Image (cartoon, rainbow over all chains, first blue to last red; front, side, top):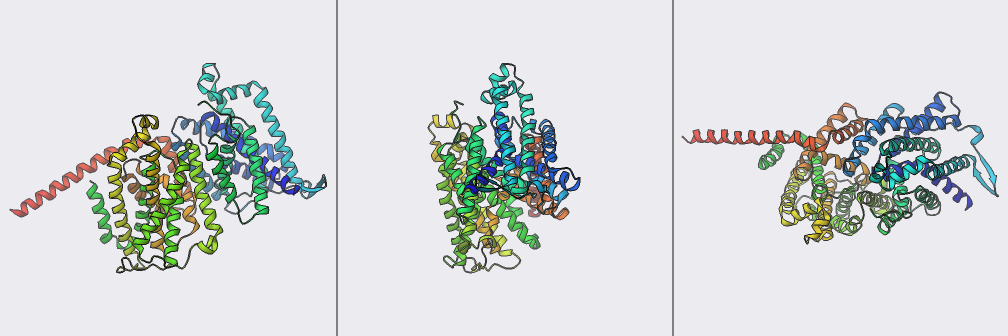
Length: 286
Length: 325
Protein backbone atom coordinates (compact mmCIF):
# COMPACT_ATOMS: atom_id res chain seq x y z
CA UNK A 1 0.00 0.00 0.00
CA UNK A 2 2.69 2.47 1.04
CA UNK A 3 4.86 1.29 -1.83
CA UNK A 4 2.10 2.09 -4.28
CA UNK A 5 1.68 5.51 -2.76
CA UNK A 6 5.40 6.05 -2.98
CA UNK A 7 5.64 4.93 -6.60
CA UNK A 8 2.63 7.07 -7.41
CA UNK A 9 4.19 10.15 -5.87
CA UNK A 10 7.44 9.52 -7.76
CA UNK A 11 5.52 9.11 -11.00
CA UNK A 12 3.46 12.21 -10.31
CA UNK A 13 6.51 14.32 -9.52
CA UNK A 14 8.06 13.18 -12.76
CA UNK A 15 4.93 14.16 -14.66
CA UNK A 16 5.00 17.54 -13.00
CA UNK A 17 8.57 18.27 -14.06
CA UNK A 18 7.69 17.10 -17.56
CA UNK A 19 4.52 19.15 -17.84
CA UNK A 20 5.06 22.35 -15.89
CA UNK A 21 6.81 24.04 -18.81
CA UNK A 22 3.75 23.30 -20.90
CA UNK A 23 1.39 24.82 -18.37
CA UNK A 24 3.37 28.06 -18.28
CA UNK A 25 3.57 28.38 -22.07
CA UNK A 26 -0.14 27.74 -22.30
CA UNK A 27 -0.98 30.24 -19.61
CA UNK A 28 1.41 32.89 -20.81
CA UNK A 29 1.11 32.93 -24.55
CA UNK A 30 -2.11 30.99 -24.94
CA UNK A 31 -0.11 28.60 -27.07
CA UNK A 32 -1.24 25.00 -27.43
CA UNK A 33 2.06 23.19 -27.67
CA UNK A 34 1.45 19.52 -28.43
CA UNK A 35 5.15 19.10 -29.18
CA UNK A 36 6.16 19.49 -25.56
CA UNK A 37 6.66 15.74 -25.24
CA UNK A 38 9.15 15.87 -28.09
CA UNK A 39 11.46 17.98 -25.92
CA UNK A 40 11.17 15.43 -23.13
CA UNK A 41 11.98 12.63 -25.53
CA UNK A 42 14.97 14.52 -26.92
CA UNK A 43 16.22 15.07 -23.37
CA UNK A 44 15.99 11.34 -22.74
CA UNK A 45 17.93 10.53 -25.90
CA UNK A 46 20.59 13.12 -25.08
CA UNK A 47 21.10 11.32 -21.77
CA UNK A 48 21.24 7.93 -23.48
CA UNK A 49 23.94 9.17 -25.85
CA UNK A 50 25.91 10.90 -23.10
CA UNK A 51 25.81 8.05 -20.61
CA UNK A 52 25.94 4.96 -22.81
CA UNK A 53 28.17 6.13 -25.63
CA UNK A 54 30.36 8.85 -24.16
CA UNK A 55 30.67 7.51 -20.65
CA UNK A 56 29.47 10.61 -18.83
CA UNK A 57 28.35 9.80 -15.26
CA UNK A 58 24.57 9.60 -14.97
CA UNK A 59 24.19 12.36 -12.39
CA UNK A 60 26.35 14.71 -14.47
CA UNK A 61 24.32 13.92 -17.56
CA UNK A 62 21.09 15.20 -15.99
CA UNK A 63 22.09 18.90 -15.87
CA UNK A 64 23.62 18.52 -19.31
CA UNK A 65 20.32 17.22 -20.65
CA UNK A 66 18.64 20.24 -19.11
CA UNK A 67 21.09 22.68 -20.71
CA UNK A 68 20.98 21.07 -24.15
CA UNK A 69 17.20 21.06 -24.21
CA UNK A 70 16.98 24.62 -22.89
CA UNK A 71 19.29 25.76 -25.69
CA UNK A 72 17.28 23.85 -28.27
CA UNK A 73 14.05 25.25 -26.85
CA UNK A 74 15.38 28.80 -27.05
CA UNK A 75 16.51 28.25 -30.62
CA UNK A 76 13.19 26.81 -31.76
CA UNK A 77 11.26 29.49 -29.92
CA UNK A 78 13.15 32.30 -31.64
CA UNK A 79 13.06 30.72 -35.11
CA UNK A 80 9.75 28.90 -35.33
CA UNK A 81 7.38 29.37 -32.40
CA UNK A 82 7.39 33.19 -32.53
CA UNK A 83 5.52 33.00 -35.81
CA UNK A 84 2.56 31.06 -34.45
CA UNK A 85 1.68 33.00 -31.27
CA UNK A 86 -0.69 35.29 -33.07
CA UNK A 87 -2.28 32.53 -35.12
CA UNK A 88 -5.45 30.64 -34.32
CA UNK A 89 -5.53 27.58 -32.10
CA UNK A 90 -6.10 25.41 -35.13
CA UNK A 91 -2.86 26.63 -36.67
CA UNK A 92 -0.99 26.04 -33.43
CA UNK A 93 -2.33 22.52 -33.17
CA UNK A 94 -1.36 21.74 -36.77
CA UNK A 95 2.07 23.28 -36.36
CA UNK A 96 2.93 21.38 -33.20
CA UNK A 97 1.53 18.09 -34.49
CA UNK A 98 3.80 18.59 -37.49
CA UNK A 99 6.75 19.04 -35.14
CA UNK A 100 5.79 15.87 -33.27
CA UNK A 101 5.64 13.84 -36.48
CA UNK A 102 9.02 15.19 -37.54
CA UNK A 103 10.65 14.47 -34.20
CA UNK A 104 9.24 10.93 -34.11
CA UNK A 105 10.57 10.11 -37.58
CA UNK A 106 13.89 11.88 -37.00
CA UNK A 107 14.58 10.00 -33.76
CA UNK A 108 13.55 6.77 -35.44
CA UNK A 109 16.04 7.51 -38.20
CA UNK A 110 18.94 8.44 -35.92
CA UNK A 111 18.49 6.08 -32.98
CA UNK A 112 16.33 3.25 -34.29
CA UNK A 113 12.82 2.35 -33.24
CA UNK A 114 13.67 0.01 -30.36
CA UNK A 115 13.36 1.04 -26.76
CA UNK A 116 16.48 2.62 -25.24
CA UNK A 117 17.76 2.17 -21.72
CA UNK A 118 19.99 4.45 -19.72
CA UNK A 119 22.70 2.71 -17.73
CA UNK A 120 21.84 3.55 -14.14
CA UNK A 121 24.88 3.54 -11.81
CA UNK A 122 25.11 0.68 -9.31
CA UNK A 123 24.65 3.14 -6.49
CA UNK A 124 21.08 3.96 -7.54
CA UNK A 125 19.82 0.42 -8.09
CA UNK A 126 18.08 -1.73 -5.54
CA UNK A 127 15.95 -0.72 -2.61
CA UNK A 128 16.42 0.97 0.71
CA UNK A 129 14.34 0.51 3.82
CA UNK A 130 12.41 3.64 4.70
CA UNK A 131 9.84 3.75 7.53
CA UNK A 132 9.47 0.00 7.32
CA UNK A 133 8.70 -0.18 3.58
CA UNK A 134 11.14 -1.01 0.83
CA UNK A 135 11.42 1.80 -1.70
CA UNK A 136 13.45 1.91 -4.90
CA UNK A 137 16.53 4.08 -4.63
CA UNK A 138 15.98 5.45 -8.10
CA UNK A 139 12.44 6.52 -7.27
CA UNK A 140 13.71 8.14 -4.12
CA UNK A 141 16.16 10.11 -6.25
CA UNK A 142 13.34 11.23 -8.50
CA UNK A 143 11.27 12.41 -5.57
CA UNK A 144 14.19 14.29 -4.06
CA UNK A 145 15.24 15.95 -7.32
CA UNK A 146 11.73 16.82 -8.41
CA UNK A 147 10.76 17.95 -4.92
CA UNK A 148 13.73 20.33 -4.76
CA UNK A 149 12.90 21.60 -8.24
CA UNK A 150 9.30 22.24 -7.27
CA UNK A 151 10.28 24.20 -4.19
CA UNK A 152 12.84 26.16 -6.20
CA UNK A 153 10.29 26.91 -8.90
CA UNK A 154 7.72 28.02 -6.39
CA UNK A 155 10.23 30.32 -4.69
CA UNK A 156 11.45 31.69 -8.01
CA UNK A 157 7.90 32.40 -9.04
CA UNK A 158 6.83 34.10 -5.83
CA UNK A 159 9.98 35.77 -4.52
CA UNK A 160 12.06 36.94 -7.45
CA UNK A 161 11.62 39.89 -9.74
CA UNK A 162 11.46 37.66 -12.78
CA UNK A 163 8.76 35.63 -11.08
CA UNK A 164 6.60 38.71 -10.51
CA UNK A 165 7.07 39.77 -14.13
CA UNK A 166 6.06 36.33 -15.29
CA UNK A 167 2.97 36.26 -13.09
CA UNK A 168 2.01 39.73 -14.23
CA UNK A 169 2.36 38.68 -17.86
CA UNK A 170 0.24 35.58 -17.29
CA UNK A 171 -2.48 37.55 -15.52
CA UNK A 172 -2.84 40.27 -18.10
CA UNK A 173 -0.46 40.51 -20.98
CA UNK A 174 -1.55 43.92 -22.18
CA UNK A 175 -1.30 45.64 -18.84
CA UNK A 176 2.07 43.99 -18.23
CA UNK A 177 3.31 45.36 -21.55
CA UNK A 178 1.96 48.73 -20.63
CA UNK A 179 3.97 48.68 -17.41
CA UNK A 180 7.13 48.23 -19.43
CA UNK A 181 7.63 44.50 -18.95
CA UNK A 182 9.25 42.94 -21.99
CA UNK A 183 6.76 40.10 -22.31
CA UNK A 184 8.46 38.59 -25.35
CA UNK A 185 11.76 38.26 -23.52
CA UNK A 186 10.01 36.84 -20.46
CA UNK A 187 8.35 34.33 -22.65
CA UNK A 188 11.52 33.32 -24.49
CA UNK A 189 13.29 32.66 -21.20
CA UNK A 190 10.32 30.76 -19.80
CA UNK A 191 9.96 28.66 -22.92
CA UNK A 192 13.64 27.73 -22.85
CA UNK A 193 13.43 26.91 -19.16
CA UNK A 194 10.28 24.84 -19.64
CA UNK A 195 11.92 22.91 -22.49
CA UNK A 196 14.94 22.33 -20.29
CA UNK A 197 12.74 20.97 -17.51
CA UNK A 198 11.03 18.70 -20.00
CA UNK A 199 14.44 17.47 -21.12
CA UNK A 200 15.44 16.82 -17.52
CA UNK A 201 12.16 15.01 -16.90
CA UNK A 202 12.73 12.91 -20.01
CA UNK A 203 16.23 12.06 -18.80
CA UNK A 204 14.99 11.06 -15.36
CA UNK A 205 11.94 9.28 -16.69
CA UNK A 206 13.67 7.21 -19.35
CA UNK A 207 13.95 4.42 -16.78
CA UNK A 208 10.33 4.52 -15.59
CA UNK A 209 8.32 5.68 -18.59
CA UNK A 210 10.33 3.89 -21.24
CA UNK A 211 12.02 5.72 -24.08
CA UNK A 212 11.15 5.07 -27.70
CA UNK A 213 10.37 7.25 -30.73
CA UNK A 214 6.62 7.36 -30.08
CA UNK A 215 7.16 8.82 -26.60
CA UNK A 216 5.71 12.27 -27.52
CA UNK A 217 2.48 10.73 -28.77
CA UNK A 218 2.19 8.25 -25.91
CA UNK A 219 2.53 10.81 -23.15
CA UNK A 220 1.03 13.86 -24.83
CA UNK A 221 -2.34 13.07 -23.33
CA UNK A 222 -0.87 12.80 -19.84
CA UNK A 223 0.78 16.21 -20.07
CA UNK A 224 -2.40 17.72 -21.38
CA UNK A 225 -4.40 16.15 -18.55
CA UNK A 226 -2.03 17.66 -16.01
CA UNK A 227 -2.35 21.07 -17.59
CA UNK A 228 -6.09 21.09 -18.15
CA UNK A 229 -6.96 19.59 -14.78
CA UNK A 230 -4.46 21.71 -12.89
CA UNK A 231 -5.21 24.96 -14.63
CA UNK A 232 -2.60 27.30 -15.99
CA UNK A 233 -2.59 30.15 -13.52
CA UNK A 234 -0.19 28.74 -10.93
CA UNK A 235 2.25 25.90 -10.51
CA UNK A 236 0.58 24.45 -7.43
CA UNK A 237 -2.43 23.45 -9.56
CA UNK A 238 -0.45 21.38 -12.07
CA UNK A 239 1.63 20.01 -9.19
CA UNK A 240 -1.38 18.69 -7.29
CA UNK A 241 -2.92 17.45 -10.52
CA UNK A 242 0.18 15.50 -11.49
CA UNK A 243 0.54 13.94 -8.03
CA UNK A 244 -3.12 12.87 -8.16
CA UNK A 245 -2.69 11.55 -11.69
CA UNK A 246 0.49 9.70 -10.73
CA UNK A 247 -1.06 8.02 -7.69
CA UNK A 248 -4.31 7.33 -9.55
CA UNK A 249 -2.54 5.77 -12.49
CA UNK A 250 -0.21 3.57 -10.44
CA UNK A 251 -3.00 2.49 -8.07
CA UNK A 252 -5.35 1.89 -11.00
CA UNK A 253 -2.81 -0.31 -12.75
CA UNK A 254 -2.22 -2.23 -9.53
CA UNK A 255 -5.74 -2.71 -8.19
CA UNK A 256 -7.79 -2.81 -11.37
CA UNK A 257 -5.53 -3.76 -14.27
CA UNK A 258 -8.58 -4.61 -16.42
CA UNK A 259 -9.70 -1.02 -16.30
CA UNK A 260 -6.40 0.28 -17.65
CA UNK A 261 -6.09 3.88 -18.71
CA UNK A 262 -9.85 4.00 -19.13
CA UNK A 263 -10.43 5.39 -15.62
CA UNK A 264 -7.95 8.23 -16.12
CA UNK A 265 -9.57 9.40 -19.35
CA UNK A 266 -13.03 9.23 -17.87
CA UNK A 267 -11.99 11.23 -14.83
CA UNK A 268 -10.42 13.82 -17.11
CA UNK A 269 -13.59 14.23 -19.14
CA UNK A 270 -15.70 14.51 -15.99
CA UNK A 271 -13.40 17.15 -14.53
CA UNK A 272 -13.43 19.11 -17.77
CA UNK A 273 -17.19 19.08 -17.84
CA UNK A 274 -17.49 19.98 -14.20
CA UNK A 275 -14.84 22.71 -14.14
CA UNK A 276 -13.65 23.68 -17.62
CA UNK A 277 -11.03 26.02 -16.13
CA UNK A 278 -9.33 23.22 -14.21
CA UNK A 279 -9.76 21.84 -10.72
CA UNK A 280 -7.40 24.18 -8.92
CA UNK A 281 -7.68 27.26 -11.06
CA UNK A 282 -8.78 30.59 -9.75
CA UNK A 283 -11.93 31.77 -11.43
CA UNK A 284 -10.82 34.22 -14.09
CA UNK A 285 -12.69 37.19 -15.35
CA UNK A 286 -11.34 36.84 -18.86
CA UNK B 1 -16.49 22.94 -62.77
CA UNK B 2 -18.32 20.89 -60.18
CA UNK B 3 -19.73 18.61 -62.81
CA UNK B 4 -16.28 18.19 -64.32
CA UNK B 5 -14.92 17.05 -60.97
CA UNK B 6 -17.50 14.30 -60.64
CA UNK B 7 -17.14 13.34 -64.30
CA UNK B 8 -13.42 12.80 -63.75
CA UNK B 9 -14.19 10.78 -60.63
CA UNK B 10 -16.66 8.64 -62.57
CA UNK B 11 -14.18 8.28 -65.43
CA UNK B 12 -11.61 6.70 -63.09
CA UNK B 13 -13.95 3.72 -62.79
CA UNK B 14 -13.19 2.86 -66.41
CA UNK B 15 -9.76 4.36 -66.99
CA UNK B 16 -7.88 3.33 -63.86
CA UNK B 17 -9.15 -0.17 -63.14
CA UNK B 18 -5.79 -1.22 -61.66
CA UNK B 19 -5.87 1.53 -59.05
CA UNK B 20 -9.26 0.87 -57.53
CA UNK B 21 -7.88 -0.17 -54.15
CA UNK B 22 -6.15 3.14 -53.48
CA UNK B 23 -9.02 5.04 -55.09
CA UNK B 24 -11.39 3.39 -52.62
CA UNK B 25 -9.18 4.58 -49.79
CA UNK B 26 -9.23 8.07 -51.26
CA UNK B 27 -13.03 8.07 -51.51
CA UNK B 28 -13.37 6.96 -47.88
CA UNK B 29 -10.84 9.52 -46.68
CA UNK B 30 -12.65 12.19 -48.69
CA UNK B 31 -15.93 11.33 -46.99
CA UNK B 32 -14.25 11.41 -43.60
CA UNK B 33 -12.66 14.79 -44.37
CA UNK B 34 -16.00 16.07 -45.61
CA UNK B 35 -17.41 15.18 -42.22
CA UNK B 36 -14.72 17.14 -40.39
CA UNK B 37 -15.21 20.06 -42.75
CA UNK B 38 -18.85 20.24 -41.65
CA UNK B 39 -17.87 20.96 -38.06
CA UNK B 40 -14.51 22.66 -38.54
CA UNK B 41 -15.04 24.65 -41.71
CA UNK B 42 -18.64 25.59 -41.07
CA UNK B 43 -19.13 25.55 -37.30
CA UNK B 44 -15.55 26.25 -36.19
CA UNK B 45 -15.23 23.32 -33.77
CA UNK B 46 -11.66 21.99 -33.57
CA UNK B 47 -11.60 18.25 -33.02
CA UNK B 48 -8.62 16.03 -32.37
CA UNK B 49 -10.77 12.96 -31.89
CA UNK B 50 -12.92 12.73 -34.94
CA UNK B 51 -11.64 9.20 -35.41
CA UNK B 52 -13.96 8.24 -32.52
CA UNK B 53 -16.97 8.29 -34.85
CA UNK B 54 -15.04 6.78 -37.72
CA UNK B 55 -14.03 3.88 -35.53
CA UNK B 56 -17.45 3.51 -33.95
CA UNK B 57 -19.09 3.28 -37.36
CA UNK B 58 -16.40 0.88 -38.51
CA UNK B 59 -16.87 -1.49 -35.59
CA UNK B 60 -20.63 -1.22 -35.83
CA UNK B 61 -20.53 -2.28 -39.48
CA UNK B 62 -18.09 -5.06 -38.70
CA UNK B 63 -20.22 -6.46 -35.88
CA UNK B 64 -23.42 -6.22 -37.91
CA UNK B 65 -21.83 -8.21 -40.71
CA UNK B 66 -19.97 -10.70 -38.54
CA UNK B 67 -22.92 -11.77 -36.48
CA UNK B 68 -25.21 -11.61 -39.51
CA UNK B 69 -27.56 -9.18 -37.80
CA UNK B 70 -27.99 -7.08 -40.91
CA UNK B 71 -26.46 -8.70 -43.93
CA UNK B 72 -27.38 -6.17 -46.59
CA UNK B 73 -24.38 -3.77 -46.79
CA UNK B 74 -26.27 -0.58 -47.68
CA UNK B 75 -28.71 -0.99 -44.81
CA UNK B 76 -25.85 -1.88 -42.46
CA UNK B 77 -24.03 1.23 -43.65
CA UNK B 78 -26.93 3.46 -42.76
CA UNK B 79 -27.36 1.75 -39.39
CA UNK B 80 -23.67 2.15 -38.56
CA UNK B 81 -23.89 5.80 -39.49
CA UNK B 82 -26.90 6.21 -37.23
CA UNK B 83 -25.07 4.50 -34.38
CA UNK B 84 -22.17 6.94 -34.77
CA UNK B 85 -24.67 9.80 -34.98
CA UNK B 86 -26.19 8.69 -31.66
CA UNK B 87 -22.72 8.75 -30.13
CA UNK B 88 -22.14 12.15 -31.67
CA UNK B 89 -25.38 13.44 -30.20
CA UNK B 90 -24.45 12.25 -26.71
CA UNK B 91 -20.90 13.59 -26.82
CA UNK B 92 -21.91 16.88 -28.41
CA UNK B 93 -23.06 18.09 -25.01
CA UNK B 94 -19.50 17.62 -23.75
CA UNK B 95 -18.03 19.43 -26.73
CA UNK B 96 -20.29 22.43 -26.38
CA UNK B 97 -18.63 23.49 -23.17
CA UNK B 98 -15.40 25.32 -22.76
CA UNK B 99 -12.72 26.82 -24.92
CA UNK B 100 -10.74 25.44 -27.83
CA UNK B 101 -8.35 23.64 -25.54
CA UNK B 102 -11.14 21.97 -23.58
CA UNK B 103 -12.71 20.86 -26.84
CA UNK B 104 -9.43 19.42 -28.04
CA UNK B 105 -9.05 17.50 -24.81
CA UNK B 106 -12.62 16.24 -24.70
CA UNK B 107 -12.65 15.07 -28.32
CA UNK B 108 -9.28 13.43 -27.88
CA UNK B 109 -10.45 11.89 -24.61
CA UNK B 110 -13.59 10.43 -26.17
CA UNK B 111 -11.54 8.78 -28.92
CA UNK B 112 -9.11 7.38 -26.36
CA UNK B 113 -11.88 6.04 -24.14
CA UNK B 114 -13.48 4.28 -27.11
CA UNK B 115 -10.14 2.83 -28.09
CA UNK B 116 -9.69 1.50 -24.55
CA UNK B 117 -13.17 0.01 -24.58
CA UNK B 118 -12.55 -1.69 -27.90
CA UNK B 119 -9.27 -2.97 -26.53
CA UNK B 120 -10.76 -4.30 -23.27
CA UNK B 121 -13.87 -6.02 -24.56
CA UNK B 122 -11.80 -8.27 -26.74
CA UNK B 123 -14.39 -11.07 -26.80
CA UNK B 124 -16.65 -8.70 -28.71
CA UNK B 125 -14.16 -6.67 -30.75
CA UNK B 126 -11.17 -8.97 -31.05
CA UNK B 127 -9.03 -6.55 -29.02
CA UNK B 128 -5.61 -5.78 -30.41
CA UNK B 129 -5.96 -8.46 -33.11
CA UNK B 130 -8.81 -6.60 -34.72
CA UNK B 131 -12.22 -7.78 -35.76
CA UNK B 132 -11.68 -10.75 -38.00
CA UNK B 133 -13.86 -13.15 -39.91
CA UNK B 134 -16.17 -10.61 -41.52
CA UNK B 135 -17.83 -11.84 -44.67
CA UNK B 136 -19.70 -9.28 -46.68
CA UNK B 137 -22.94 -10.18 -48.37
CA UNK B 138 -23.42 -8.98 -51.96
CA UNK B 139 -24.51 -5.36 -52.37
CA UNK B 140 -28.31 -5.10 -52.62
CA UNK B 141 -28.14 -8.87 -52.98
CA UNK B 142 -26.76 -8.52 -56.52
CA UNK B 143 -23.20 -7.16 -56.71
CA UNK B 144 -20.47 -9.20 -55.07
CA UNK B 145 -17.37 -7.61 -53.56
CA UNK B 146 -14.52 -8.76 -55.80
CA UNK B 147 -10.84 -9.18 -55.05
CA UNK B 148 -9.74 -6.21 -57.16
CA UNK B 149 -12.03 -3.78 -55.39
CA UNK B 150 -14.07 -2.75 -58.44
CA UNK B 151 -17.41 -3.12 -56.69
CA UNK B 152 -15.99 -1.57 -53.53
CA UNK B 153 -14.80 1.49 -55.41
CA UNK B 154 -18.02 2.11 -57.30
CA UNK B 155 -19.95 1.58 -54.07
CA UNK B 156 -17.76 4.02 -52.12
CA UNK B 157 -17.90 6.59 -54.88
CA UNK B 158 -21.69 6.47 -55.05
CA UNK B 159 -21.98 6.78 -51.27
CA UNK B 160 -19.56 9.72 -51.33
CA UNK B 161 -21.51 11.40 -54.11
CA UNK B 162 -24.90 11.00 -52.43
CA UNK B 163 -23.65 12.24 -49.07
CA UNK B 164 -21.81 15.10 -50.75
CA UNK B 165 -24.97 16.29 -52.47
CA UNK B 166 -26.80 16.17 -49.15
CA UNK B 167 -24.00 18.09 -47.41
CA UNK B 168 -24.12 20.66 -50.19
CA UNK B 169 -27.82 21.14 -49.62
CA UNK B 170 -27.27 21.42 -45.87
CA UNK B 171 -24.54 24.06 -45.95
CA UNK B 172 -26.33 26.22 -48.50
CA UNK B 173 -29.57 26.15 -46.54
CA UNK B 174 -30.48 28.81 -43.98
CA UNK B 175 -29.27 26.31 -41.41
CA UNK B 176 -25.81 26.30 -42.99
CA UNK B 177 -25.72 30.07 -43.09
CA UNK B 178 -26.60 30.26 -39.41
CA UNK B 179 -23.68 27.92 -38.71
CA UNK B 180 -21.35 30.30 -40.49
CA UNK B 181 -22.58 33.17 -38.40
CA UNK B 182 -21.96 31.12 -35.25
CA UNK B 183 -18.44 30.45 -36.42
CA UNK B 184 -17.94 34.15 -37.03
CA UNK B 185 -19.20 35.27 -33.64
CA UNK B 186 -21.29 33.04 -31.35
CA UNK B 187 -22.37 35.92 -29.14
CA UNK B 188 -23.78 38.00 -31.97
CA UNK B 189 -25.33 34.94 -33.54
CA UNK B 190 -27.18 34.32 -30.30
CA UNK B 191 -28.18 37.99 -30.19
CA UNK B 192 -29.92 37.81 -33.55
CA UNK B 193 -31.92 34.85 -32.37
CA UNK B 194 -29.99 31.80 -33.54
CA UNK B 195 -30.20 28.93 -31.04
CA UNK B 196 -26.41 28.44 -30.97
CA UNK B 197 -26.23 25.32 -28.83
CA UNK B 198 -28.97 23.51 -30.69
CA UNK B 199 -27.36 24.28 -34.06
CA UNK B 200 -23.98 23.05 -32.90
CA UNK B 201 -25.47 19.84 -31.51
CA UNK B 202 -27.25 19.21 -34.80
CA UNK B 203 -24.22 19.72 -37.01
CA UNK B 204 -22.01 17.70 -34.66
CA UNK B 205 -24.47 14.83 -34.87
CA UNK B 206 -24.66 15.08 -38.65
CA UNK B 207 -20.86 15.13 -38.91
CA UNK B 208 -20.70 12.07 -36.64
CA UNK B 209 -23.09 10.31 -39.02
CA UNK B 210 -20.83 11.09 -41.97
CA UNK B 211 -17.74 9.92 -40.11
CA UNK B 212 -19.53 6.75 -39.04
CA UNK B 213 -20.53 5.99 -42.63
CA UNK B 214 -16.91 6.54 -43.71
CA UNK B 215 -15.71 4.11 -41.04
CA UNK B 216 -18.36 1.58 -41.99
CA UNK B 217 -17.30 1.85 -45.63
CA UNK B 218 -13.73 1.08 -44.66
CA UNK B 219 -14.81 -2.01 -42.72
CA UNK B 220 -17.10 -3.20 -45.48
CA UNK B 221 -14.58 -2.74 -48.28
CA UNK B 222 -11.67 -4.29 -46.38
CA UNK B 223 -13.72 -6.82 -44.37
CA UNK B 224 -11.61 -5.92 -41.35
CA UNK B 225 -11.65 -3.49 -38.43
CA UNK B 226 -8.81 -2.87 -36.01
CA UNK B 227 -7.99 -0.58 -33.10
CA UNK B 228 -6.11 1.57 -35.58
CA UNK B 229 -9.41 3.19 -36.61
CA UNK B 230 -9.48 5.08 -33.30
CA UNK B 231 -5.86 6.17 -33.36
CA UNK B 232 -4.70 9.72 -32.78
CA UNK B 233 -2.71 9.63 -36.01
CA UNK B 234 -5.90 9.16 -37.95
CA UNK B 235 -7.47 12.28 -36.46
CA UNK B 236 -4.27 14.25 -36.98
CA UNK B 237 -3.89 13.09 -40.59
CA UNK B 238 -7.47 14.09 -41.18
CA UNK B 239 -6.74 17.64 -40.07
CA UNK B 240 -3.84 17.69 -42.52
CA UNK B 241 -6.09 16.46 -45.33
CA UNK B 242 -8.55 19.22 -44.69
CA UNK B 243 -5.87 21.88 -44.39
CA UNK B 244 -4.28 20.86 -47.69
CA UNK B 245 -7.61 21.09 -49.44
CA UNK B 246 -8.87 24.13 -47.55
CA UNK B 247 -11.80 24.38 -45.16
CA UNK B 248 -15.27 25.72 -45.62
CA UNK B 249 -16.12 24.89 -49.21
CA UNK B 250 -16.76 21.11 -49.06
CA UNK B 251 -14.48 20.29 -51.99
CA UNK B 252 -11.54 20.91 -49.68
CA UNK B 253 -11.95 17.47 -48.16
CA UNK B 254 -12.14 15.78 -51.55
CA UNK B 255 -9.20 17.63 -53.09
CA UNK B 256 -7.21 17.22 -49.88
CA UNK B 257 -7.90 13.47 -49.75
CA UNK B 258 -6.64 12.99 -53.30
CA UNK B 259 -3.53 15.12 -52.67
CA UNK B 260 -2.84 13.53 -49.28
CA UNK B 261 -3.12 9.92 -50.46
CA UNK B 262 -0.99 10.54 -53.54
CA UNK B 263 1.60 12.33 -51.43
CA UNK B 264 1.55 9.60 -48.79
CA UNK B 265 1.86 6.92 -51.46
CA UNK B 266 4.75 8.74 -53.07
CA UNK B 267 6.57 9.46 -49.80
CA UNK B 268 6.06 5.94 -48.53
CA UNK B 269 7.56 4.76 -51.80
CA UNK B 270 10.62 6.98 -51.34
CA UNK B 271 11.22 6.36 -47.64
CA UNK B 272 9.08 3.48 -46.39
CA UNK B 273 9.86 4.09 -42.74
CA UNK B 274 10.24 7.84 -42.42
CA UNK B 275 7.48 9.31 -44.52
CA UNK B 276 5.91 10.77 -41.39
CA UNK B 277 8.79 13.22 -41.18
CA UNK B 278 7.88 14.78 -44.50
CA UNK B 279 4.21 14.92 -43.57
CA UNK B 280 5.21 16.80 -40.44
CA UNK B 281 7.33 19.14 -42.50
CA UNK B 282 4.38 19.85 -44.80
CA UNK B 283 2.22 20.71 -41.78
CA UNK B 284 4.82 23.05 -40.29
CA UNK B 285 5.40 24.69 -43.65
CA UNK B 286 1.68 25.20 -44.25
CA UNK B 287 1.25 26.98 -40.93
CA UNK B 288 4.37 29.11 -41.29
CA UNK B 289 3.53 30.17 -44.83
CA UNK B 290 -0.01 30.83 -43.73
CA UNK B 291 -3.17 29.16 -44.86
CA UNK B 292 -4.66 32.38 -46.23
CA UNK B 293 -1.65 33.00 -48.40
CA UNK B 294 -1.82 29.46 -49.72
CA UNK B 295 -5.44 30.12 -50.53
CA UNK B 296 -4.36 33.11 -52.57
CA UNK B 297 -2.02 30.88 -54.58
CA UNK B 298 -4.73 28.37 -55.17
CA UNK B 299 -7.41 30.79 -56.29
CA UNK B 300 -5.65 31.87 -59.53
CA UNK B 301 -5.32 28.17 -60.32
CA UNK B 302 -9.01 27.73 -59.68
CA UNK B 303 -9.86 30.62 -61.99
CA UNK B 304 -7.52 29.20 -64.61
CA UNK B 305 -9.24 25.84 -64.29
CA UNK B 306 -12.64 27.43 -64.74
CA UNK B 307 -11.50 29.30 -67.85
CA UNK B 308 -9.99 26.15 -69.28
CA UNK B 309 -13.13 24.13 -68.75
CA UNK B 310 -15.16 26.94 -70.32
CA UNK B 311 -12.92 26.95 -73.37
CA UNK B 312 -13.08 23.19 -73.65
CA UNK B 313 -16.84 23.36 -73.40
CA UNK B 314 -16.86 25.99 -76.16
CA UNK B 315 -14.55 23.84 -78.28
CA UNK B 316 -16.83 20.88 -77.87
CA UNK B 317 -19.79 23.08 -78.61
CA UNK B 318 -18.10 24.29 -81.81
CA UNK B 319 -17.18 20.76 -82.79
CA UNK B 320 -20.70 19.48 -82.39
CA UNK B 321 -21.87 22.57 -84.30
CA UNK B 322 -19.70 21.72 -87.33
CA UNK B 323 -20.83 18.14 -87.20
CA UNK B 324 -24.38 19.33 -87.33
CA UNK B 325 -23.66 21.23 -90.53
